[in-house]
Length: 365
Image 1 (spheres, rainbow, N blue to C red):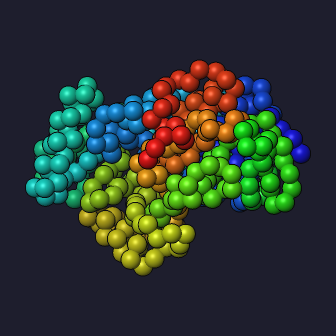
Image 2 (image 1 turned 90 degrees about the vertical axis):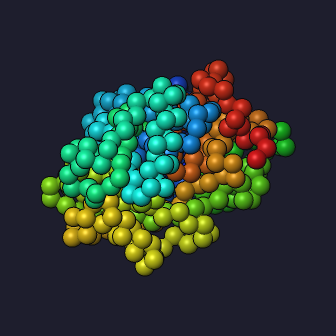
Image 3 (image 1 turned 30 degrees about the vertical axis):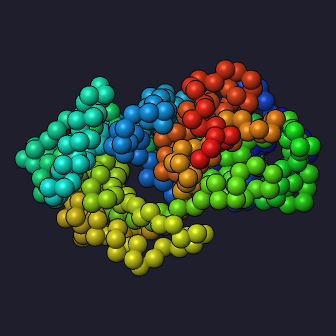
C-alpha cells in the first residue's frame, strides 16, 4: 500500500490535519488502533477558553488565541461540507471565587488580562447572581465574553465526515514502527504490513512516543487521566461555561451539563473510579446546587497527552518526511484548527503561519 501522507492517529487532530492535506491535493490515509475519534477527542468537554486557563502571555497563549479565532469559520466550513452543526456557542465563560484566596487569584487574572488588552469583566457577587441566578453564592466572578465552547463529539463527527467525503482513507491497525533509512521516513509497519508514504504525521495523542522510530523519549508524551460526568437538567440551569472549585461545568442547549475534570497521573488506567465520581458530583453541587438533583446520564474517562514542558509538539522532526502533531494536553479541541493549518503547510513545504520553534519536536524540554 502507498499514499502521499500517512497520519498515525485518528483523533480530532489527526483527522483535521488529514482534511487540510487532502484539500491541498495529497492522497491521505489515517491509521488508528480503534474507531476514529474514539479516545481523548470524543471525551473532551469542548471548552474554547484560553483566557480562562492561561497564566500569562507567550507563544502558547498566542497560538491558542489564533486557533480560537479560527473556530467560528471552521464550524461554518464543516456545516457547509457535511450539513452537520457542531454547536458552536459564544455565550462566554464565568470564573467564580468562593473564598478570599480564590478571589485574590481571580483579581490577578482579571488584571493581567485587562492589561494585555483582553475583555474581562469583574463581577461582584450580586452581579453574578443577577447574571446566573442558579449558580451557588460566591464572593466574586469574572466574565470572559470572548471565550466560547463547542460540542466536542459533534465536532469530531463533522471533521471525520468531512475528511471521508474529501477522499481521506481510514485504516484500523496498530502502527508498530516507522520505516526509514536513518535520514528519511518512508512509511510505517501496520500490524506487520508495510505501508509506504512520502510523508508521515504522528498525531497519536498519549500513544505518540510509543511508536518505534518517532524519535521521542519513551515518556515524552504521557497519559493524564481525566474523568468526566454528564448530567441532565430541564431546562438548562445556566448558559455560561463556569470555572470554579478546581474544575468546570459546561451547559448544553438541550439541558445536558458536563462536569469535569479530574487530573490524574495513573498511567494507562482509563477506568472511572468512585473517588473520581465523588469529586465530580461534589463539584457539580458546589457550582450549581440544583445539579445535586440532576439525573446522571453517563460518566467516562480519557487520556490527555501531556508533555514535560506543557507545550505540544508541532512541525517537522529531525527525520525528513516526519512531522508531529501531538502533546496538546487539555487543548486538543481548542488547537485543532490551527494545528491542521500549521501541519498542512509544513508538510507541503509552505511557510508556517506562526513561529514553530517553541513547539518544535527538536526542542529541549
